[in-house]
Length: 170
Ligand SMILES: [Zn+2]
Image (cartoon, rainbow, N blue to C red):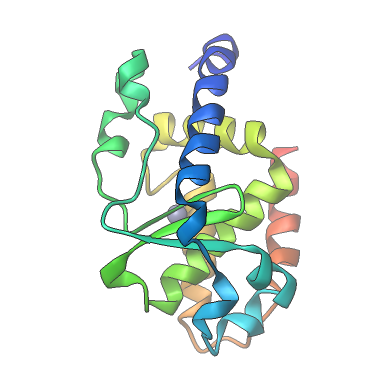
């Protein structure tokens, strides 16, 4: 996707995100309210209090194929376990107790915050187009941190690590 194409689609996706988050806001809960034991060792209390979680039957994905971006059809149809937009993430109801899924989506919340919406979406779409869902750089980062979270490595500040890793994209 050229930068010009991205500039055309960005307002569509940005507005879709605003509407989607507003529609789900009444049932959003803080990440902290899940009372996970390991998350506070990796993510700040400030983030856990601020990040919102919506438990759903299906994770909402912007319908970009309806505006002609058919290259993202696989992503639209992949039925994700979780997905993050700005400070809010969605998780499937039967995965809602999976601490590592919350951990992973919180990495994306940090990425959204540090990059800003436009830069996040541009990088995410570029990764998706060139490398596919799992191998886009923002997903690789999230999955690598998730693997460390699930390992016996000692806890660390994920935000500090992500902040440093994102420097390569600035
Ligand atoms: Zn992810």
